[in-house]
Length: 260
Image 1: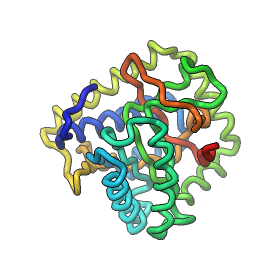
Image 2: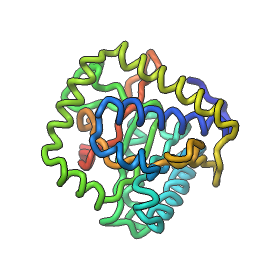
Image 3: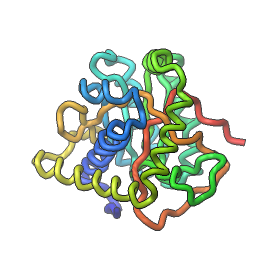
Image 4: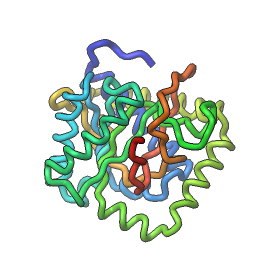
């Protein structure tokens, strides 16, 4: 979908609504992440949208979200999804930014408390051909802030997280490319309906739109650690998508591979 050169609050609200719809339809609806439902249902997911067009402004917005999560009880906000449709559209740039994001978390006092999980529409996953259906991911780039205590609790309770990855691969292949594109279209339709019934645009701070999962308004919500279909291959160049990219899954409690 095309966005204006100077993103409006309405465009930011739509990006948040699409991301939230993907979490509800794909991540929760298809069971891609067994840890996601609780926080979403309880309204503990914060969805934020940065209108930044470059890494410097995005880093400032990320810092604000890190600080917010550090001072907010988990009972209020479990996780934050920072959607950034207009910054780091190239996967290689996005992948490089993850080191900057992790350094910012540490500098702000979040070491051992928070970690960042990554989602990008042009992700390439290791060990699979370029056209494999399991590359289908979320509609917009997202940086997810996770509480490490919540990640540990979820992993301990579930046990074999490798089984989640294998189940997700099977789901992706069962749906096929047409199924994923149909799912993405349904998420977009959900987003337009949600905004039309909501009458309002998003609240904003420094070019960011924010909404909580329980409110229905385009604020930002948090989603607990989710699981990727495959660990991303940071050496792969971004692949142009001929059709609109479909949405992706919140990442699991695994660290991304270090670039080589």
